[in-house]
Length: 335
Figure 1 (tube, rainbow, N blue to C red):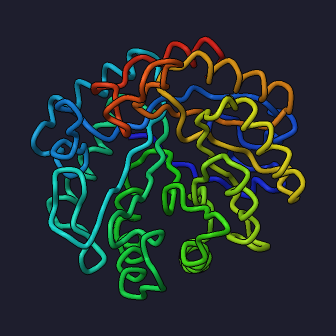
Figure 2 (cartoon, one colour):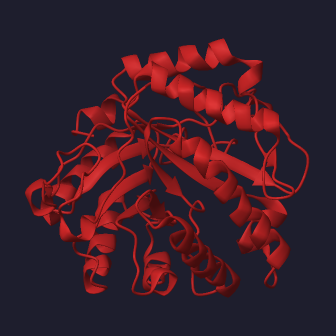
């Protein structure tokens, strides 16, 4: 089991940056990328139905299959993964876990530990763990502040963090997936502000990317409101092209806006992009080279990009059958 190394003060460029030697400055690694990989959330999809097959909630149902899928992804050159804690205040579904009381069941806690051990055994060098509250637990669904659900979500993070930290893997925690809000989401803004305050007061910020952000201007403009004068050491962005604007253009806009806000020294990770997509790979590589922004790694989501002239897929959330082995388009561009 490898020794876990947490991120130090990347703001001054002297941290033990994951994938880079300790003491290496951000300026010296501008634009550089370590090998990435995939979001790994399900070990099977039946048509559009992925719900019974979550790799955390249902690890005990298919441990050998999951281990073989991890081995296949690693053999294909992937080195990093993003796994999801999908939860709500209701019984387990196979993917979504019951977080009632601010924790998951003892069996699901064991499943999470076993999955992380399998990822380590397969030879992956780093993980992101993304908390994904859904339904009544998702602050973007609250018409007004819900203190009970907030406490459930916060306690879940605090209760699962020791399992993640004890895995031996290099890790970063995404406190809430894609939670950087728009201007029309004041409750979600309050949620991120309160959770950031509580997490950093309890645990500092060395092991978190804060909240992943969809890489659109209407979200990015609210990043300073989320973090105030205490931003994370790393930011995580998700880039999906739409309306004729490709991932590289979205990246460049995000880079420009973040510079305007004074976030010039933090590195980025790219936590979601279309699966094995040559357009995303090439335009992002061009944007990174042009801007010099440090991106440490990229993680694909198991969703194929829509094809021009072809209707959107009937499965909008995941269209790539597990495991998401193919990563060659990104490897070819240095990801």
